[in-house]
Length: 422
Ligand SMILES: [Zn+2]
Image 1 (tube, rainbow, N blue to C red):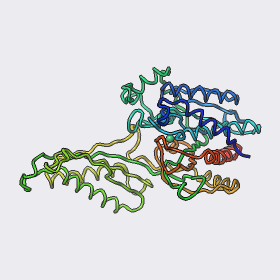
Image 2 (cartoon, helix red, strand yellow; image 1 turned 180 degrees about the vertical axis):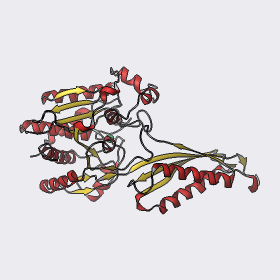
Image 3 (cartoon, rainbow, N blue to C red; image 1 turned 120 degrees about the vertical axis):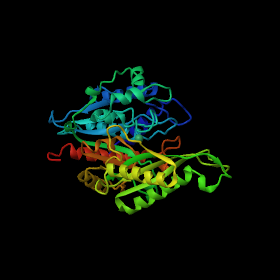
Image 4 (tube, rainbow, N blue to C red; image 1 turned 90 degrees about the horizontal axis):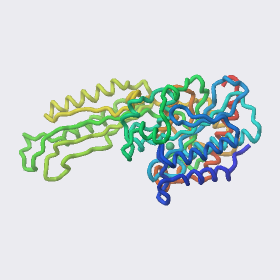
């Protein structure tokens, strides 16, 4: 049993037409006209399959194939169809289209699923649209962790808040109605392009995720004093010298903690950033990735950073401060996202049966699946991204590679939607 190459290609090419920037990549922002057009296309496709279609209180679109057990928890499959500005045809869409095609095959073969199968089509995943830490909105709304406060404050490039954009889109958000009891979801499975070069470099068809590291971000600021480059060394308050001590501290500290955690100061903003002046201000952005929850707690990380900054301030006389860049309602760093291992093993078997090569990949960027792991059994399937390019007009995955991913998804769904124990 295999999915249909032509239909998959067609869906991807059709969705790419709902695009605010033709000829310059795909731009389909959350709550835009193009979002609405793509949604109408997807609804039309679901109607042809006779799915039960509904929207929650946050414009997340669902299509259900009923199971023999009417009230049983659902197998949920899907991804997002919004894009960044000047993005590509595949990010998110690959997951939407492969889930849709899975539903088509199940309908064609009159598959008798015990559990209901829900297609979930999300329209506000990209964090770029409303700024850092504002993405993966649909899954957060579904899990009850999205706040009205966020809807009222964060703004898109047109100056609209999320709330205003939603209203202009014709949706009055109702977060209570969007909440879904995690007990009603048996498994959540998302296929996504890799957004990295590993599968292509290794020549593998499929990436199977076992876990995605947690992510934490902080900003450290250093307030020195500007002086010209002739100022005597002794009386200087050089913000960059202080920041440099901090960079070294973070590196040594992270190394001392072993393999369960990694961290980098990857970005510095220096003012005035001139060879003629002593820097009076530096902002340093720290990103921390956690691979387990045992090595160190989020509170210990924050306390340690504050302590280190205080010591540097005492030593250099440069005032310091720390700002957390946390997503509302989430720890900083977030917990690592651990996938359902039994399903990973099932997919390994499926790949063998289909003759597809695979590799375990334990990294990844922010996806709705990451939000889901704390609440429900979750899995992710990666397919190759050409040259690892993503969020760019050159983003590309061969249609045949998408089809292979769809085949793995189909077979997994056929297995776990029958499974009595699961
Ligand atoms: Zn995506």
